[in-house]
Length: 295
Image 1 (cartoon, rainbow, N blue to C red):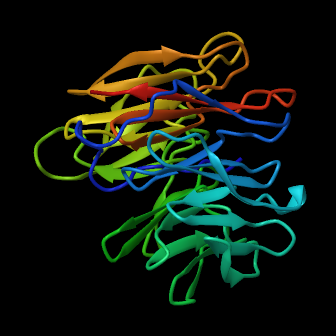
Image 2 (cartoon, helix red, strand yellow):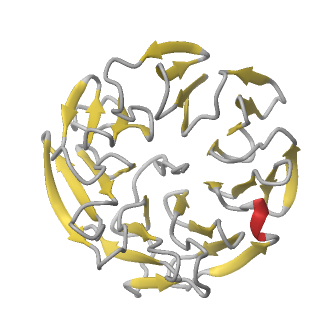
């Protein structure tokens, strides 16, 4: 299962427009609404990839449908601001309904914007120039870090590639590389590389491991204000209630827990001074997104 890592630019500030609702709900069961989230810092995008539906949300508004298609194309499985991928049936990457790239199962994971993007393919990734990089596997996470592309893979002998150069996995089964982000996690004014290691229930921040060690903590990450990151643990709780944590000064504190089988924390994004938390739930569920102010 691919997880979109949502970490976008500068965090929202207190004077930006605000959402009033505390929850957005999906409209159909087995759609996975909330499984993927993205943000440009103000607006948000939500998808229900198993139902092939993509929504945009303006501050103060409810989600508005942007796109829907055949379920087995999985549109919205890859999601970034203004971009979504439909890797099924060949693969298509869209920017506001316009196809940017096709073929090779493109678009399962996306990073960047319409002007500069990178999207997963069946065996690696493609960038906005049309160049393909072969890794031998489909990435689980992608990150544009300036001129560099970092790709993560949760399984196999390699956990990360930086511009195609591999970093070997040191601990089998740790799922290192499932999620990626880069932001000022410790408040020192410099950005750190953050790697989700949900198989061990941890996040790695410039090599230091942090987290409770349970619940697949590290399956999703979002950047807050300097010194703050948010981390999802979608299988926390005996019945996969899920949870979201705030990490400050190297300490992870529970911010919210989900309902039974919620899988809260499957995806995260920060927009308009709110933390958006995806809870796609089980097959019978329509899924939901919890909207939490983070002043």
